Structures are given as structure tokens and as C-alpha cells.
Length: 149
Image (tube, rainbow, N blue to C red):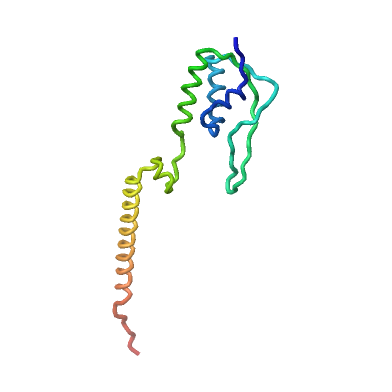
């Protein structure tokens, strides 16, 4: 039996920024019995760089070390999980940017349609506002009655 540390396996991920997601999936697999693993008393630092909101500073997190039995079933699970984590992001929308459009992560035609829809909605809103003001202004221009003295 070949026992491997979780920290060593995390280094083999094709996308280290997804190491936190991998660790959660690994722990779920151990909990459900797909993988035989056990906690060790030590901790290790994940390779993922976390950023603080409203700041450019980054930090890393530590997590509990685990040891597991590396079997052919584990290798198959790892290959599949690594592919899924490297292929697509789950959750959150990608912010539109030139780089995102050029790389194909964001569809340009979808952005064009959305922009046109927003511009049309803003135009119609402005027209409706203008009509409402015109009605109010016409009422204000009505001749005033003067009282006889």
C-alpha cells in the first residue's frame, strides 16, 4: 500500500487556485467512503492565494494534513476531479473585460444584445419621464385668474 500526504497530492493539481475546492471534495470523498484517509496532527499551507475585499493584499490559508491510501480507484477519482476543477469555474459570473472577450470566456454578441436592451430601456424611461414633465408643465401654464379688487 502506498500512503500519500494530501499536501503532496495538492501540488499535483493543474490549477493551484482551486486547491481549496479540491480539499473540500477530497474530505467529502473520505467522509462518504470513496477514499480511505485519516487526519494527521500537522497542518500545511494551501497554494491558493486569497485576496482581501477592497485591498490588493493576498494571504494563504492552512488546513489539516491528511494521509490516504493511493489506489487505482483514487487515481481515477483524482484525474476526474482535477479535470473538472481545471476546466470550468463554478459559481460567480465572469466580469466582462477585453481579456475575457478575447479568451472566449464572455460572448461578445451576448454583451452587445444586453447593452442594446439596456440602452433602449433607458431611452424609454427618459421619454416617459419627459412626457410626465410636459403634462405637469402644461398645467402650470394655464392662465391664472386674478381676483377683482
